[in-house]
Length: 150
Image 1 (cartoon, rainbow, N blue to C red):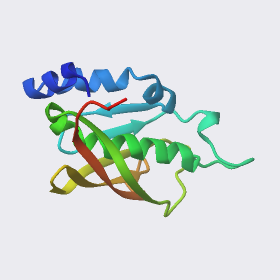
Image 2: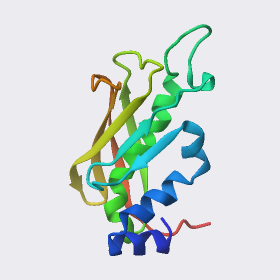
Image 3: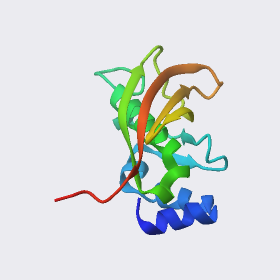
């Protein structure tokens, strides 16, 4: 992330970091609201499901592409505590679309499970509004990425 993101993280200003993510166009278009109340376990809510969130012709379930995009963001956010080391990004994402995600909205929780060097291993789960798990993902977030060479 940018130097300002690293500074906000160093200052522990999680509300400002949360705001930066929630203002991103991609996040807004997904209908995602990022919650960093606990930065070690970021949470994301998609409360308002629009017609473009739905998959297939005539299906009443959230499209897997939408679910995957939200999972990518949330799993990647497990790297936020390390933003003062440099950029961070999801480098590997394994998704198990176990059960359909209904159009009533959903939320995602994520957490890091271990770290080896600059590789942060993490998991995220999609829940329906009743707290029932629907989708699970595991992955690796690369932390401490320095400037990209041209």
